[in-house]
Length: 206
Figure (cartoon, rainbow, N blue to C red):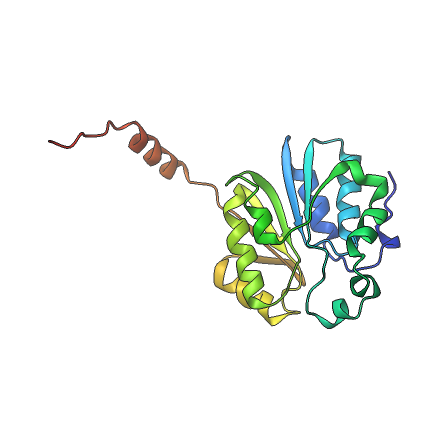
């Protein structure tokens, strides 16, 4: 399928990262995009997944009310309360490729098991408290070796501050994208856990 995301209003600067995540995904995989706006980035990822032929479940999270940022408050679709309607119209060609959760980021995180996701991309509210809440909610959901990432590092001070506080060792492969690959347990730690788990429990004396 040919890409059509450029026909959709909005912002999207993570094409290289999205392509890389699809290319490296081991099947079956599960991706989550947090903050979809009118579907520009969602459309790009959906087409990449379709063209790859891989089994990748793609979930999209947005409450479809915009944020307090000026560009959102002034948007005609937000003001008219039709942001979700516009999103679904825009995504009609790939509707069967995505699962949409119309709720807040933190609410949606509770739907996923810990260490179950291969890739999570955060681009919702950009204030410090919201970004901290998003990272805190979604990092446990990413499997070891998986990637948590987002946009607007260095654009919004709250984004950069939250990422620096919660994700030491993060990378910035292409400004303003930030990425964090969750560490896999070392062989030594796996062996230690295995030994601990097989050790018989002692019953307390009564």
